[in-house]
Length: 289
Image: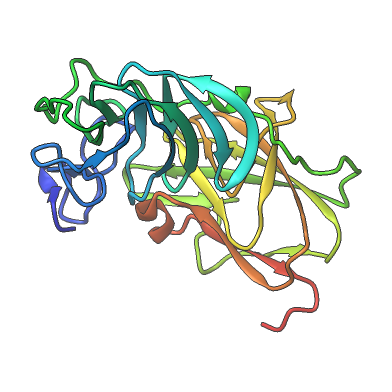
């Protein structure tokens, strides 16, 4: 809990605020362990092209990342190549990763800034060619960032998508919970008292993630990658991922190949949600318990 502002929490650690965006309020946000009061400045060559890997390593915070007025190109999601997409800023959920190509100007510094959704709080670093002046950047944006959404997700396509075939298993997982009492569930079950989803090696699996709550849930699967194949009922040949943000009252369909026998966690990567029960198990038939 170090660094948290606890004024919006009751004696049981439950949120007393009205916002559905951020359960926990922090006094600072970091990029590579530094705040904007002393940001990391990375020296680049002049007119450099760089590959920037963005990793949201937070436990409960989602951001919009902008590229200092430049247009970047998203080329990978969660470590998987995607068809190139031009972007000026991107939403990034908890535990998600993006690789972005940037062509930097020869004579000025470029701030890479991440603003917390629903607030003006921000963090970031600076890319600078030799001799470029470094301006001080405040830890607050001019206006609050919107809620992280699926505007980019709808545009993304995997460079190496799953081979089309009929699913051997279709399953639905309902995401639910409340701020008061603070408890979050999958299919109305709370970890560790859950019913595992049983998989058979080699089968194609399709899962509908249906969010019945007013908070977004970044859902993460261990041991596998999946493809986004529909958003709110609209089919698409989406990105390969291991983490997808399911927005409030939204539905995401994912597809995966059951190709890694064992017992695997599937959970919300908002760790406060996970710790109150929002986790289940994907278990292969024949796996020892």
